[in-house]
Image (cartoon, rainbow over all chains, first blue to last red; front, side, top):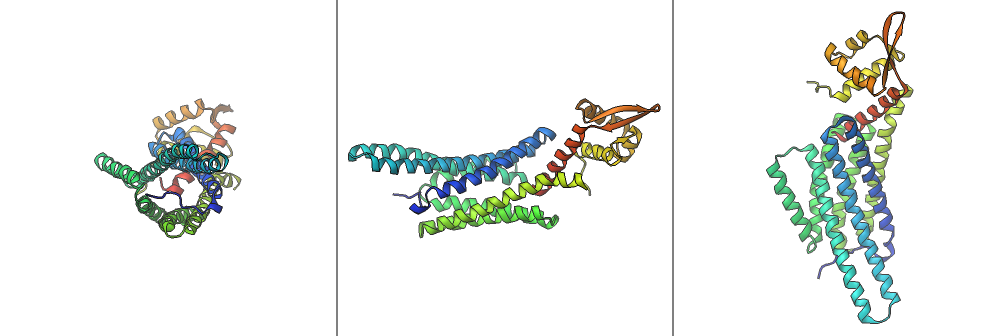
Length: 232
Length: 90
């Protein structure tokens, strides 16, 4: 029997709010990337936007699975007969596992699409890596930490790229972007340990919240850039 | 080696040059300052006029290019886009 929910009961609902902030940050980047794609027709923007859309959708699936659990808990309390309660649980389990699978698949695909914006690869390599990522996402049901370790590997490379970008252009927005990706990378390692202690889930979610708030601040700084220039 | 200017870079350069000249410039001055060939300049200018970012006026028999409010707003959008590009290393 495998376990997919590691959140302490008192943290139910709070993690949904954190995930909603995450979706807001990721979806905003997608919207800007598509807006800029429409202006300059550069496909790099389109794929960059799609990467963030995939990640935003993955978190929407994660949020949906959380609601499935809450629905479950509520039904167990309200309905008396044991047999009836059992049937409802089974249906919710299916939704829950499908949702979690979609979360993992979309997250790994999103990270990989973002990765390919910076590290160019030929189509054979892309197909092979996509196959491996989908396989990892599917079998992570049995060893959840494989998903987090794979996300960690992709995120670490992205964070390193943003660090190099910051080295070339030492401005606050680039530093914030690097810091936010470094923190998102860190969350993946913390998530690996939730099996041992549920409090790690809370810690990882809190770090995630800080990381995505930093990402939102980065976006605000980028959006204020044009205005500042005009005032000068 | 400096990277080749993209279309959006050239448009931003052209609009910024007009803006820095007080919103009005002679076409030949714009061509030299934006470092463009005559044919290139004509193509870009047609596009800018069609999108109402720039309009042509005549003052004492001299032709001038004037940046519109839409043009000024578009400069802001392009600057944000370029900053977005630099920040995310695209």
